[in-house]
Image 1 (cartoon, rainbow over the protein chains, first blue to last red):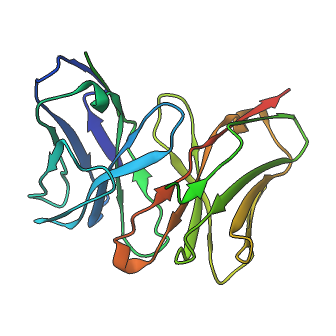
Image 2 (image 1 turned 60 degrees about the horizontal axis):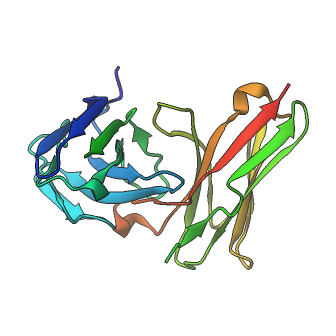
Image 3 (image 1 turned 120 degrees about the vertical axis):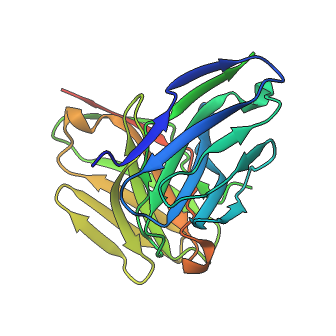
Length: 113
Length: 114
């Protein structure tokens, strides 16, 4: 049982490039989330999904896109990377009920230069 | 607007003593509160939670207190151990209709000295 797996662990992008951050979970959770954490700040929600085929915006969705074709996978797409997207990205999953703890992956550290 | 605030970026405590981490919130619709612990280069891991219908929840060395009138919660760790050194995040959720989304505070870095 691997939990939540994120790839890659690190990535450096040039301004204007695109990439996809991968996230997979094997806990059969319906709910999945993408958060970003900037230095000295808390985690901010980018996008979330309550099930396959259903996604919705979080607090900071601009510059990102997501899809959820299966229960297990929830990739995050960055189009036209900008320096403001330099951050650590965390994927998480949960059962979704109020108070249901989120299970996080170990993060992807992204630098845009 | 920061709905969940942890005003102390860092806290240093001697091993064996009590650690108290504080968190304030502004949204009166929050009905569930959680604490997460994060080690470097790892994702946050769930520590303890409390529903708004309670004012205290204990789990071993960890106790969370909720004061709804003051919109304040705190995490007590007794006794503190060097392995507790980590960043602690307070988080809140607004209910089932919000899809289980959590709003996080900025974190407090706890250092427990041997």
